[in-house]
Length: 419
Image (tube, rainbow, N blue to C red; front, side):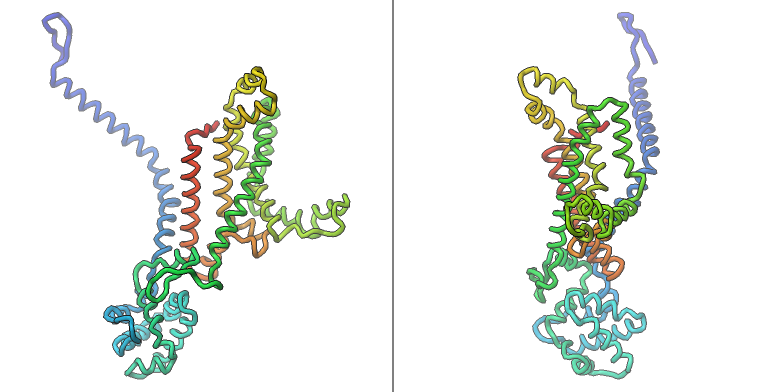
């Protein structure tokens, strides 16, 4: 309530001040709730289709449920095993008990498949033991298992069996880095005939770098031309840059197959111009892969560079020229450094997108041009080894995050002006 002070100035009583503060806080709280309700659908969508799948992938890369869920009695019996000599009769009796259930559930092959990742031949060993269990009989089970297959007496096999029963395992991540654990759990280099993933990651990074460099060399002049042309002509050129987005990646990749094949248009042109005397292999190799990926990724490099170039005042170069710098010196010393944030953003975007390519290398590349995504699809769809597929995806995600961190450290996303 307003009151009049001794000097005739109107004031507010203390209780009215408190009431005003409460009303302001309530109004701010209502505004925050209203704002949150507006963005809530988008947040839920991002959580459902982006964050949750990534989280599930990361969990799957270390999850290890096959043996633990199917062989509980065996794992319980192995808890007291010393790991020095072949387990005793109680462990084999528990194994027989678990195999009776896995034969009913038809999961014996799944258990054997999981152990087979670390012990070649384990799947057939389990299936053979399952048939022995189906034939009936009673103990002593240790003698029967050893007679069925002497490898049941292998101490390293049982050590791996016990380790495979843990809820989480580093096996898939280690395999993705060409590493393995021995029977004692020590980490060491994987066998030469199984060490393929570091080469695949190196190949993926190398192809992505080639594509990024090619798009930068081709896209930088186009972006500069877009920035300096009058709006009438720049709009036409921008439409041409964005035109590839109107067709799918599959269609654009298939068109390169038509152009690059041995009897394709490009080979016909080379022969007609007498540049080559015979048809050249332009497809199913590294050249075709990089060329097709460059064509697809070119707009992603051009647009961030153009957005930064458009914000650079033309007076900067004119000022350098007026001070005696030549055209090339003014461009390299004054103009080009200001475009580096856009170059960094465009190259980073292209490189990250190239890391995850699958369709284009699969269609126009050869066996030595397949990237990590091909093997993720292979383990997901054909091998049904989702743990290995998730581990490869997790490492690819870590590489992507590391690249973004380096970019943000030296360039900073806040320096890229869009629009």
